Length: 284
Image (cartoon, rainbow, N blue to C red; front, side, top):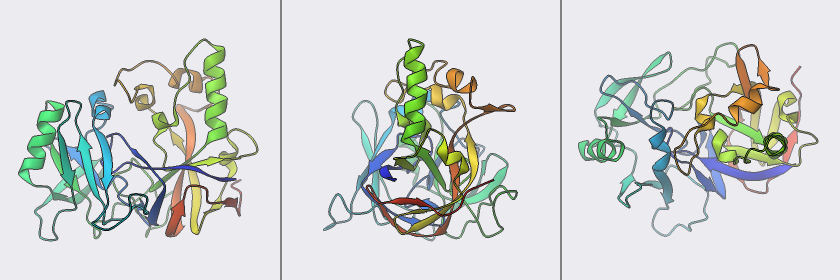
């Protein structure tokens, strides 16, 4: 098996970026979900409440003298593109930036405020008051204690630092959609970080445990429960019932519809598209 594609989502719930390579640390791929938009109360905003967030695209701006195909690192800036053509560049706030408490799901954590002009840009782009925040290195947001240790943490992803998906699983889902007269969907609907090709069968990743991706070591610890965001077309922000309706017919466990696997980083490093993927241990 090998890495088919890599994806970084610098601002939670905005459009992600396919990349050729990325540095990987305990928070996942560099820059992934390090920024987040919150409302005036400090509560996180996502496409669940505002599907139009998907119309804000992101791209990477490498540091001066660095090749555009160089691995994504914290030295890269992020450019956000609004539908009308307006852009704004993001860089991590300075260490002395003002802090604020923000809430993501059940966790209240400390984040760095961004400049007021960035808040104003996003408020105009989304048509609502909002604030852009950054997760500093010293903030420790805990992870589900049933599947992670006390030292494990995540940035502003929903739950875990890395999401791994298999192309074989998407192909199986799309075959089912097409058989019902529905359009196939792209992997972008599921917002993974690492897409693997060459799996022996669809959903083989359900059983993967410790997995080497290039020189990075991951523990796949929990299936990802999917939500209404998968039904939003990332190109148009229009919603529907698919692919969640079809997935719920054969990938539902209890009340949760499952696709892709959440992972913890056990050894960081650098990962490239085309790197080998080796499963060293299986989950029971």
